[in-house]
Length: 147
Image 1 (cartoon, rainbow, N blue to C red):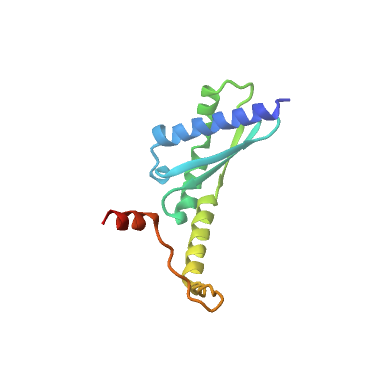
Image 2 (image 1 turned 120 degrees about the vertical axis):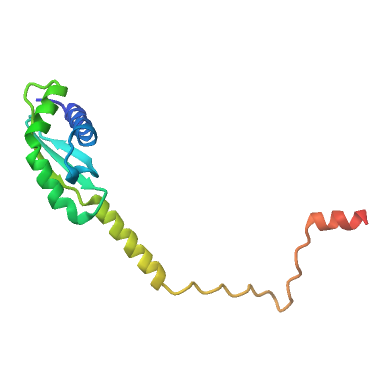
C-alpha cells in the first residue's frame, strides 16, 4: 500500500495532467473555463475524485460536468499514458463550489459593511478642567530661533 505522501504526489500529478488536457487538448466549448481545483485518490490508487470549478457562469456547471463525463475515457487513457502506474485509476468528476462560496461570503461582508452604522466618534479626552495646550514641535522651535 502506498504511503500518504505517495498518494498526494500521485493526486498532484493527476491534477496537472488533467489541467493540461483541459487547457490544450480538449476542444469542447463547455470546458473553456474549466479548472481542476483538487484531486483526491484512495489508498489503493484505484479511484480518483477530481473536483472542478468553472471560472465563467456558475449555471454552466451541469453542462461542464456532462462534457467531462463524456470525455472521461479519453482523460483516463491520457492519465495512464503520462503517469506510470500499475493501474490507472477510475476518474470521477465532481463540482467544487469553493469559488461560489468565496463570492457569496464576499457579498455578505459587503452587505454587512453597508448596513452597519458608522462608528461613533470618540469623545475628547478630559483633563482637570484646564484646556490642554497644543504640543509644540521641535521643528517649530528651531525655525523660531532662526528668525
